[in-house]
Length: 228
Ligand SMILES: Nc1ncnc2c1ncn2[C@@H]1O[C@H](COP(=O)(O)OP(=O)(O)OP(=O)(O)O)[C@@H](O)[C@H]1O
Ligand SMILES: [Mg+2]
Image 1 (spheres, rainbow, N blue to C red):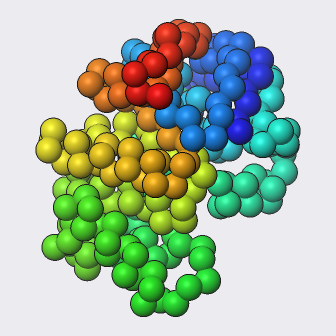
Image 2 (image 1 turned 120 degrees about the horizontal axis):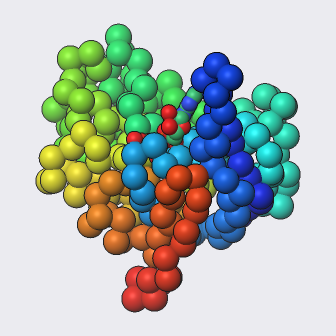
Image 3 (image 1 turned 135 degrees about the horizontal axis):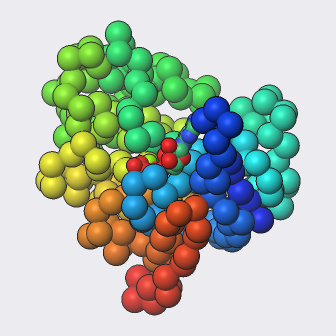
């Protein structure tokens, strides 16, 4: 489903070049569940943002369903993202003057009625323990509450691929567990691909495929046969 070939990414600060990803190769099948771990600055977010088609690789290719993506074609990338990808950012990136419910509804691209959208969004907010905050302003939410809204926002369009950048980074263990359970259940129900970047080893362990990114190099641990 996603194929990453000979990919590298450089960043410059002034004249100084930093190679953040080095010759990465990765084949991801529909329905795979990957966790990505590794030290801070190792390139995890960069890798995830390339998979979300938000950052262009310096060299190499990204294929979705055997189609090679052209990173110069913004419109095609937008369409691809809209139809395939749900992204949970490391920072929640919500619109702070709107409520959780409004943030979710405007992110939805289905043609169903407003009331049916509202019902779906409420159900998802309930699952992450936010039933009492539907209509609060996002600016009044705690960091963890906002993060849970952003998790739900990534799910509203039934994406084929869910990309999560430290989805439990701002959460206590109870709410973190709820979010991970929601993601795992949604992946089971919808048979979508789930990729979670995390610093939490207990979450990293859950992946059926475990990736380790360090100094821009990708290593895959042995497959976890028990979970497959
Ligand atoms: N837009 C940018 N411009 C310059 N350097 C960047 C940019 N984005 C990322 N970097 C650099 O690339 C390196 C990898 O960053 P990245 O965010 O991918 O790391 P990470 O593995 O997600 O780290 P963390 O666990 O702290 O989130 C860092 O050294 C960072 O400073
Ligand atoms: Mg990061």
